[in-house]
Length: 407
Image (cartoon, rainbow, N blue to C red):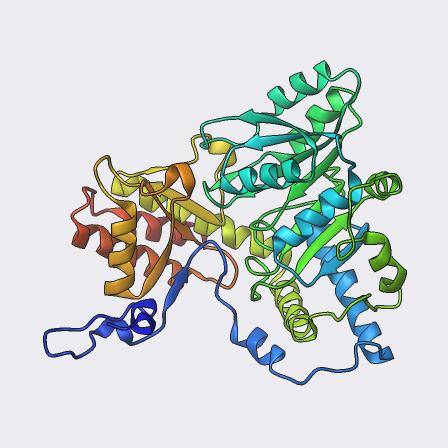
């Protein structure tokens, strides 16, 4: 079997004939990148226009405005041609200086990556750890910041939806904890796997910098990232001295007012973004949140009925865009995922770092509906049966009942 066939989930029988796994659609059930709707693909399939023209400037200003609607903010928006990590670097580089304290959390792989980035920038990183089954504890944050009487900590960076664990942080409670401590630290939040899927309110929740990416709830390929920036963060940027060039908010700001950029924007991605935003508003942001809630609840109902356990240990923090599931002791989650891909042409996410081999992840975000979810859960159950992983055969009925009651 060649590499391309393996990626498609193709298998071959003794005569060399491909099995039915090569027919029909490929189920991409990773927690990002997610499925790209045909409307978005068609919107991107057009020639570029002059990025210095009045036409483009007006077009881009509309994107800034409508991204603000998704972030629920009237604050400034920046768009970078980069993955979400680029917008994360922009958030740090524009607000902090070498030696500044930053409070961070070892609560999942993507939280750890932010710790690594901050460390390489020469920041004084303070890390609160947990077992990766919970989000950052607001009480622990308040306690830590109350001890920081000199206000050495300049920022608190939190992942809203930890993609590696299926745990959603309680951002409003964290904001209240910072305020209760009487601490002036900025609140920086990674929304990469929550924006456009889960409830997120930059202004109302008192977030200073929000970090977003295009390849998950926004239903685009990887390649665009975003910052939403409060007045407090803009003030901090005036004295921040970390090196920056590509990520410089001030350089961006000098041209964004007219809808232009200091370097060539990703024009085709902008076309796709325009279509994706239109789709979000057509469905309605509240309806999108309700749909993701329904799918998260149905997936968790299936997992519980199978007799398996999700990674998230606190019911207040369950994610509605990705569910991470433990396999029983002695089972190999990666072998299970490989079998599902080969036999049923469905890609599931794997466990990362300390969860490697112990967990598989079901992405249920973005361009996704009830019937697709039922197909995905049926694929998981078929995979459990074929792999011999011990479970109860009740998951599909439990998910069906949850979806039926919700709709």
